[in-house]
Image (cartoon, rainbow over all chains, first blue to last red; front, side, top):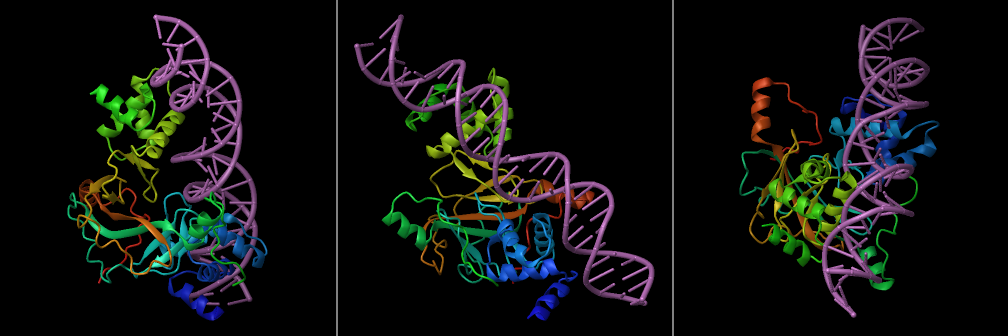
Length: 158
Length: 158
DNA sequence: GTCATTGTTTTGATCGTGTCAAGACAACTG
DNA sequence: CAGTTGTCTTGACACGATCAAAACAATGAC
């Protein structure tokens, strides 16, 4: 498994290092994490590391096409390993949680704008805003619980 | 004109003040402006004002449903007065320019995700990424694109 | 018209996310 | 196993945005 991770990184044209392996595993374990969450996940297993190192690794992954960077309004940038399949996202307005959604109609038929204003369009990005199950429940029960819940979608060790 | 602006603000439940009138006019004149652009537009006509005042006004407008706040990845927040008509946006990856696009099929028929993961969906947001006419021309002519390496991870459409 | 209430603006400080630059260091090549 | 090249570390910093408190002005009652 470690070998496969290494191969994945090498195949992207990047050198294999401990921080990169750790970030890759963290992202596979908890997709849609932001830089700080990734940092907290990799920190214990790396002797000495820094937030900047994580930024560097995430930037390299993104540039190499290994990861995708999404930036929902109001959240810091988040990263995921699903690339190249034009999928979209559900974002919870309560806790910021992000979930994947497959492309709406397979080949994105409805994503051709009626007026292009002369733009050379490269990509259509769809974001669904709503409230996740937890937030709906908490809301119905307690009342004002906006923004209170933690952002972590899972919690354990990779 | 001025009276209509005042009525618009009053109708939203807000007090009418000089900064608000100025910001309203600035936004109508230049939609999709960010806070700093608005500030620079209203600065000359207000004796003393500050960026914070603009932030305050824009925040009040947004909360009152008078303006809409959009936050394209890589840009500061932008504001527009078109609200309540579920339209979408074209964003230039070169210069950050934003243009409006009417809802793709009128009533947003294609914006129902296949899997909702239990989310209570409130809204679908569509952003088209591409390059505006100016940027395409500049690119073809000069070659050195201003900010070629940007956020857009080109997802190859079959 | 005048006054009090309430909301708005101003001022200044501060936070969070993310970037830049330089030196130390480790991974791949031959 | 050594050299080259890219990566990590460290520290400083830019930028957008927010918060708190005091000065102030717009609305509504009298």
